[in-house]
Figure (cartoon, rainbow, N blue to C red):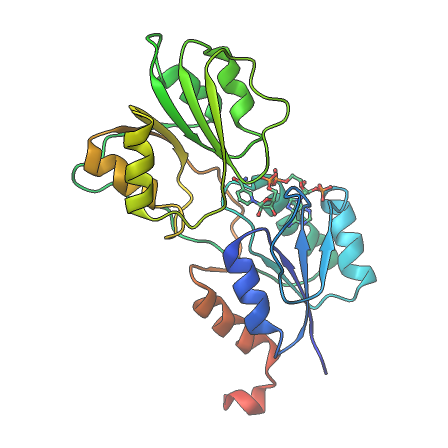
Length: 253
Ligand code: NAP
């Protein structure tokens, strides 16, 4: 019997996982549709919201999904909550890929805040040169502090642009290496970086570069995610899925 797996994606790991699982099951990858030209995913893709937890539960039933995998970004808290609830309602098992967050190390100057709104406050009243390495949805709140210079990097253009007098925009898609990030921070004379604690290698370069340059990082803490069975890496999650899809006699247990 071919198992049907739905992966909620939008991350590099989700794409890698889909590639690995495609040989074992019928895999569909779901994207929110935020990025205008997402990179090729290598498996069938469906795009757009489901209409909340109920909509996702209905989709799981209609498509006879046997296993739901939440491999969304650690800050995509709404879809993760919906996934846990939909799995419960539809009676479908769920696994999550939860990339561990970064931990501060010697030399880091992190200021921890709960939301991007709190990050605005943490910048303080005096004008600063700020690198916003946040999603385009989160940068709008920085209009509340128009005294700063902003360098804003995003995958797709920030539209509308921020109603602040001094902002520069950079379009780029990671991974971003430390040496390039170091050069970027120096070139723009950045004195504070605002970041999420995304974890992983692809976007750690700016954190390491800020440490090397003695620059403060205002770090937005991770949201609370539902408690579901989870693995930290693609490899570990693949093993969990193997346990699920392979018949007992093949596993030798
Ligand atoms: P979110 O706030 O948790 O989700 C908002 C709504 O978007 C969800 O309720 C759902 O709509 C829809 N949605 C989100 N992910 C989806 C998916 N994989 N497939 C289908 N619908 C999805 O999510 P977000 O923070 O806007 O993130 C959107 C996407 O970007 C996610 O796929 C995430 O993995 C990726 N991403 C997010 C970040 C980040 O920092 N937040 C960074 C990198 C990548 P319905 O309720 O209508 O189903």
